[in-house]
Image 1 (cartoon, rainbow over the protein chains, first blue to last red):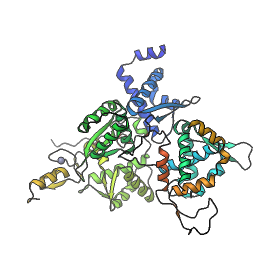
Image 2: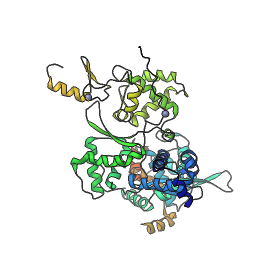
Image 3: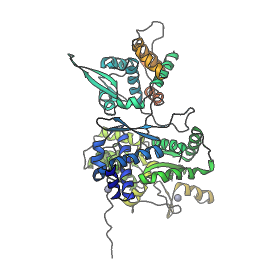
Image 4: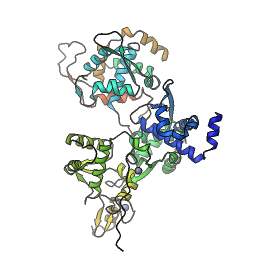
Length: 204
Length: 215
Length: 90
Ligand SMILES: [Zn+2]
Ligand SMILES: [Zn+2]
């Protein structure tokens, strides 16, 4: 901390604000595709020569996300120092007059997370592919809305840290299984998934 | 700044642009959601409160007019170009090149539009990685979906969101080509020329109203 | 909520994926092509989904996610060269 204080003394408040703004922008840019921010990238591409005051800049950026955007900066991986933004505002009853555009991929992700959760936290990939096939999404074919489904599920959702896709050891041929990723653990409400499960069942 | 402002800002992030009526309803909704007093007359004050906080990040909620309807809109725009803002990942470099070529075509055209054929032809002159015909068509669909372009019967125009956000860029890049409304000084792409002066849609309507027999 | 959640998850064996997809297809608005007379094997529903089917699920999913909205912009995403200096006739 004394190192940070000494670092701050050598800089003008405007310089620190400018660097903080760049960090905020970097988070916003990475969040366009829901890619977590790695500390190493942040330091290399943005913080650069201000690395000695990195903790102070992160503290200020977190405060801006909290106070201006209603978002929370969270470290989801303490080992690799990865950060994401999640929403602090509760969804409200009563429809908003402006409906936000929806991304159909979130529907796909939601189904996969639900199955993993209902199966106790882990499922073999075959069950996921079979479930999607029943929902008319064939993993071997190009889907109208999702394109390369396998790539979306095992690459995009994994990079976003919504899913973990790991090899089951000692299987021949090779088999994989899915877990919830670190982002899903902090971003997705399990009790709300359960409520949805009930809702779907009641509808019939 | 309270949760009502934050909720409003979040909706602006998700949508990019709202019309004035939408903004009014949205503020009412956001104030209700966070149990705060809401004054319908203070629309611009509400937005100024947010803008004050956005300023250090070079973001801004900017008011502008739709050329088609003359209605007011609010768009959340980025105002800086830095190494960090250029990391934006929505479009690849060659896709951005094609977007700029499309802007060239639209701004330099008589009527402020460009046909898909012209855009496809201009894709042949790209300096970055060339786009195939199908890729260009897909990109144009995405640009319309993301509200950067409008499309009507194969003709593309700049969207209201695009004009609001890109205005400083348009004014510097196309100083000579750009038509400016004689009265309000807004850029007028579709602007109608009444003999010698260019008028934006809103001013044209007022002009027509006053000089019914003339136009 | 959370307790009930882990309790139900622990009973994961009770979860029946084919029944789940069957219910979900109804939720998505599947247009079933059979006349309903002869029951089809579960999980192999014949029919077609409306174009907004996945949007519908996505919209419902949103209330379960505390996702941050993302900021998209055009200006500032590419390098804008200043226009070439004008040739002035003196
Ligand atoms: Zn005007
Ligand atoms: Zn530049």
